[in-house]
Amino acid sequence: MSAPAGVLVVGASAAGIATADALRRKGYRDSLTLLGAESHLPYDRPPLSKQVLSGTWEAERVRLRSPEKLAELDADIILGDPAVGLDPATRTVRTASGRVLTAGTIVVATGLRPRTLPGQDGLTGVHVLRTVDDSLALRSALLSATQVVVVGDGVLGTEIAATARGMGADVTLVGPQPVPMASQFGTLVGGLLGELHAERGVRLRLGTAVEGLTGRDGRVTGVRLDTGDELPADVVVVALGAAPATEWLAESGLRLDNGLVCDSRCRAAEGIYSAGDVARWQHDALGVSLRLENRTNATMQANAVAANILGEDQAYSPVPHFWTDQYDTKIQVHGLPTAAAEATIVDGDPADGRFVAMYRRGGAAVGVLGWNMPKQTRLRRGEVVEALSAPAT
Ligand SMILES: Cc1cc2nc3c(=O)[nH]c(=O)nc-3n(C[C@H](O)[C@H](O)[C@H](O)COP(=O)(O)OP(=O)(O)OC[C@H]3O[C@@H](n4cnc5c(N)ncnc54)[C@H](O)[C@@H]3O)c2cc1C
Image (cartoon, rainbow, N blue to C red):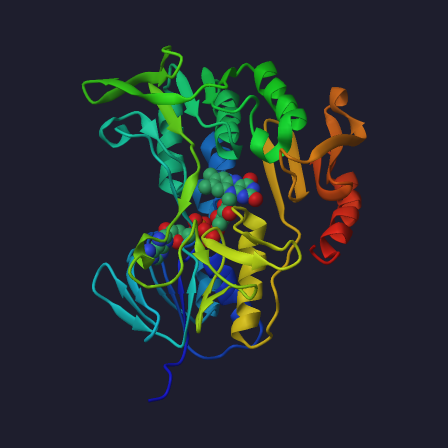
C-alpha cells in the first residue's frame, strides 16, 4: 500500500499558517489541509492583550492573512472542528464533527490552553485571555469595571494590568513572585517592571498566592489570598500561564511531557512534526529540550518544520526572541535570560527609562534585554549568538 500524500496541519494560527506558507514558498505543490478548532479566520494573538484590549485596533486587524491571501495558499481550510484523536501509524486525525483526515505528514500546531482557578467557570466576571473572543469580552467588562484584580505576575498578567490601567481601571496585580516576571527577567529588571506598574497606579500584591475566588449569586466578588486577605473585585483576570493543547493526543502513543516531545528536527515520530507553543524539541546548540511560548518562535519553527518535511534535514537551534509592550515601554529579549543568570546594565540608564541588560552565567552571555533601546539591544545580540553557537558542553 502506498503512503498517503499531502500535509495536514492541525492548528490554524500563527505556527500553522506559517507552516503552510513556508511549504508553498519552498515549492511544495501537493495537497495541504489546515484544520482549526476556532471558527474565526486565522488571527494573531499579541495584539489581544494590547491594541485590541485597549480598543486602539478593531478586531479584524489581527487577521494573519486576508481571505485572498488565504485562497492563494491553495489549501483546504477547515475551521471550527477540533481534532480529537491521532493515529500515528496510519497518520489519521479524527475531528469532533466526525471527519477522518489522513495525510502523509501531520504537523501539530495546537498551541496552549489557559490555566484556570478552581471554581472560576461557574462565576461571571472572571476572565482568561487567549482568543479574540476572550479579548473582546474582557474589554467590554473593563469598560464598566469598578475594581479589577489580575491574578498572575508573568508576561500576560503584567501586559493586561498595563492595558487595563491605561483604560483607566482600578487595577491590582497579584502573584507569588517577589517582583513581576522574576522567573524570566530576574529581580533587577523585574524590580524595575514592578516600579513602572506602581508609578502608573497599579497596586501590587506580590509574594502572595491566590487561594481562590469569592462570589455571590454566580458573580465574582473578590480574590482570596493565602494571607487571609480578600481583595474585592467585580472583574478578575486569571493569567496563570497556559498548558500545551495536547489532550487530543492522549491516546496517540506520542510522547507528551509539557508539550509534544520532538527531536532536533521538530519531529515527534515518522511523518509527524510540531511547531509553535505546543512543541517541545531538542535544541542542539543549547543542549536542552525546550518549549517556547512566543510569536517569533511560532514562525521560525514553522519554517524549520516545512524545511524538514521537504527533506532539508535541519536542526532547529534558534536564538530565542520575544517582546512585550507595557505602557510606553517596549522590552525586547534575545536569548534566554533567567533568574539564575547575573544581570548587569551595559547601556543606558533605568532612571532615563532606557537601558540594555546583559545576562551572563559562568561568564557566558545567555541573554540580552532591551528596555526602550531596540537598536542597542540588537547590537548586543551578537554576543549572545556567539555564546549560543559555541558547542554545548
Ligand atoms: C494575549 C496574548 C498576547 C501575547 N503577546 C505576545 C507578545 O507580545 N510577544 C510574543 O512574542 N508573544 C506573545 N504572545 C504569544 C504568541 O501569541 C504565541 O506564542 C503564538 O500565538 C503561538 O502560536 P501557535 O500557532 O503555536 O499557537 P496558538 O496561537 O495558540 O494557535 C493554536 C491554534 O490551534 C487551535 N487548536 C487547539 N487545539 C486544537 C485541536 N484539537 N484541533 C484543531 N485546532 C486546535 C487553537 O484554537 C488555536 O487557534 C501572546 C499570546 C497571547 C495569548
